[in-house]
Image 1: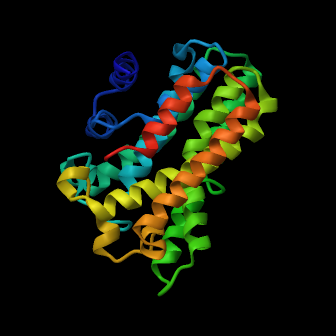
Image 2 (image 1 turned 120 degrees about the vertical axis):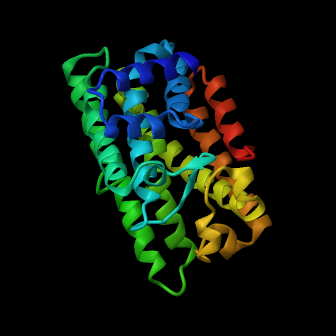
Length: 279
């Protein structure tokens, strides 16, 4: 992952110097786990394609993910002061610069996607997927559903899982779908959507479990959900049942991977590591 980190650092440094660029770099290079790029690289390996072919699209996805975190931390959203063990972007800079940094990362992500070393048809598919899964029928829809849930006194498990499906899941579907597009294997996209959706639910439930059992220092981020008594899978199901539900999601993922019948050892290893992660 060090080569990929150097790649995205170079892309940020190619921009004109400004406080906004500094804020973009601060958040993008602030020690993220690079889960979404890793999923893309592992899926490409399953197709027998070198990870480097996915660097532009992986950078695009990581930029979108980072912009969503910058905006999510703002006072108008979750009002979190800590991200990845450091002050949130609006605390390290200011709110206006943080908003522009998020906007800049989102805009730049489309330039990055279009630098992918594939045909023009595939580039259009990648850009379309980026807009779809990050946009108003994807991650942003999840953010909107999450804000609606905060106004309700009670939420059902189905409502919480719908939020997880969009807010977390869509940006985990995107790297897998992108790998199929880069590999020119569009017929595999429905399977990757099913895998990414289940992975998103699993990932968010594990996050909820960690939020309920860890400190802000251990997690490296503000635990505003617990502070605000926000409904989660853990609060509705209880800790042990939430763990069982996450494991059940993994079984569904593996069944879909079996159907694809690819050389997917690295991808399976990453998915298992996400389930067993400690932060």
